[in-house]
Length: 298
Image 1 (tube, rainbow, N blue to C red):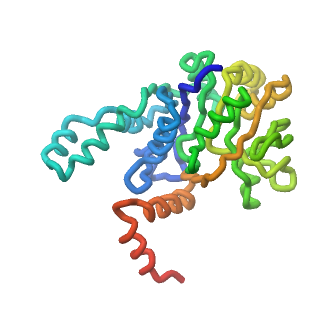
Image 2 (image 1 turned 135 degrees about the vertical axis):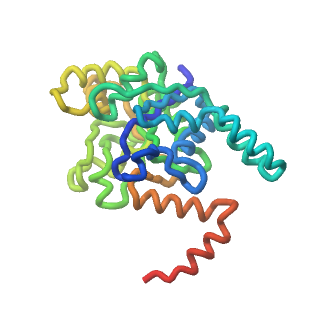
C-alpha cells in the first residue's frame, strides 16, 4: 500500500461573494483573527504527515505564494529589532515556509472542480492523495479530518469521501450526498453519488464536504468525463466518481467524527468562524468575550 504523501488544494476561484475585498486579496487569504484560512488547511495536512502540497492557483493568487514563501528581509530585520518582545512573531513567520514542500500550478481548462485534478496529474503520479478545499475545513478531535481519511484508506484501500451529517434542510441543496450501505459506524459503502439533491431526493443524510482521499484512477475517469463534455459545460469530479462506481470501483464515505465544519466561503459563515476562533484565541479570549457581552442586541 502506498503512503499518502501528497495533497492538492484548488485555489483558483475569484471569490466573488466577497467582492470588493477579493478584488486584490484572494479569498483563501481572508484572516481568521490573525491567520489566513488556507493556513489552517495546510497545518492540518502537515499534522497528518503530508509533506508535498500542490496548490492550483490563478493569475490573481500570487499572495498565497508569498505567504508560504520565506518572509522578506525587511520584515525579518524589523522583527529582529524588536528584540525579545517580537521574537515569537519572528519564529512564527519563519516557520510558515518550512511547513511543507509547496508547488504551485496555474489552472487551465474548463470550469469545474475536476479541472484542478487534471492540472496536477503529472505531479501526483500513481499515488493516492488528499484533495481538499482552500476555504473550508473541519476541526476534529482527537483525530483530525485528514487523519481519519488516511486511516479509512489504510483499512479499505479505496477512494474515501470526507462527510458530515446534514442537519438543516438547506444542506441538501448545498452539498453532494452519497447513498449505499453502512458497513461500520460512520462508514458507507457508496453505491450512488447525487449533487445537491434536495431533502426529498437525497439518498441519505451523509453530505460529502471539505476533503477527499482519491486513488490515482480518478484521473482516467476524469478523462472520460472530459471527452464527453459539450462546449461550455463544467468538469466535475462527482461525474468521474459515478463512472468509477459504474465500473465497480470501491468508494467509501467516511463520516468525520468529533468534528465541526467551518465554511468560510460565504460571508455569514465566515463571520461566525471568526467569532468562534476569536473566543478561543489565547490573546483575545477574555477581552473579546467581555466585548460581546457588552453589546446590546435587539
